[in-house]
Amino acid sequence: MRKVKYGSTFIEYSFHENDSLKSHYITVEKNIGVILKGKAIPVEKSDKLILKKARWILDKLDLVSVKEDEKIVTGSRIPYLGRSYYVEVSVQKELKELQIEFNHSKFSILLPSSEVSQSEIKSSIEKFYQERAVEKITPRVKKLAKQTKLEFDGLRFRKLEKSWGNCSGKNIITINPAAVKLPYSLIDYLIVHELCHTKVKDHSKQFWAELSTHVPNWKELNERVERVKE
Image (cartoon, rainbow, N blue to C red; front, side, top):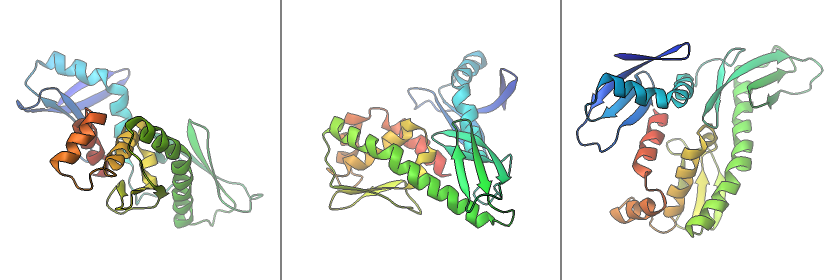
């Protein structure tokens, strides 16, 4: 295990040698940590590659550390648009219902009573994701459809158990609201991926060829998306 210092924080990482890779790639995997993959290079060079992506690595470490079954209390972290934000929970008895506020630096969860259950809190967070997904992702779908000249016939946001999105035979695109947890670079990749399915329905060579014309680095982005699933 290698270690590099970024500010006052140490980032530990492992190096996986792979001579078949043309470039070096960094992944952050749940329960495993930071991995640098690529051809063999001196430690000094690998340290520099980690430092170059240090901010992203720290954000991703926060993101993958969030567990679905953890209680939401003051000090918890909630993932949103590629970052993991501090949570402050407080009781305000003048309120009639639970409220969630986000000020771009933290989440404030305001409870009308200390008797509010964790299921109610998590349900409200899911509602927040649903609303923000519609707000943030809808205009990006329209913009990317125009850029790629790939037309779709409808857009829906619905919780999906095992995927970030899909495209129906009638070119209706469905996006998992949980996608709003991801950074915009991955959200845009997911959108273009589904837009390409309006032209090629399966994951054949033709599909990946179509995707590569719009997203040349799709392999890297696809790997990052798959890592988030874990």
